[in-house]
Image 1 (cartoon, rainbow, N blue to C red):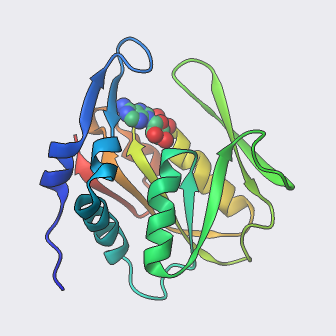
Image 2: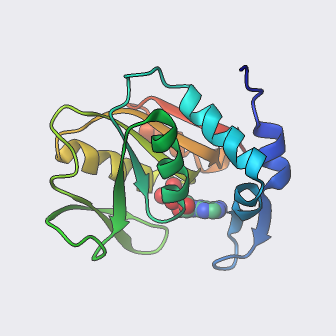
Length: 177
Ligand code: AMP
């Protein structure tokens, strides 16, 4: 079945929320897109469909909205899912990377034994903003021996130039703003 690019329907469904979670931020609320079963299905099928069978061994998702998408993409590709979580949430031995936020720093973690060495990993998140979170996620995957074969986003805020941080990776953004 040939799937039509769902970008127009996605953009129509996503809700812009001004000044959330703080003044000056235009938040992209994906919950209406997730609630539309056909649209959710088509976005996942589109993201997963870009990857050839066998080219991805695992999908890593970023806490928390990234989990919704990455888990579904992993299921569609028939591969495992690896959670990358905010510090202090994972129960086993972890690797940790800290990165700069607009104000202060953040830390995310991955289980040390989440991947076998040399596994091809697709990183998936909902929104690419400055790119700091996704870059930190890629570093975590690499630190435990994974090979990042792609970094895919449902949406990207191009005015924040996040792709510049990810130039050494194979990136894809479904809906550019
Ligand atoms: P960044 O590290 O700046 O690329 O921020 C990316 C992370 O923050 C992603 O995990 C997003 O879920 C979240 N995020 C950043 N900006 C927005 C936004 N305007 N709307 C929704 N989520 C955002």
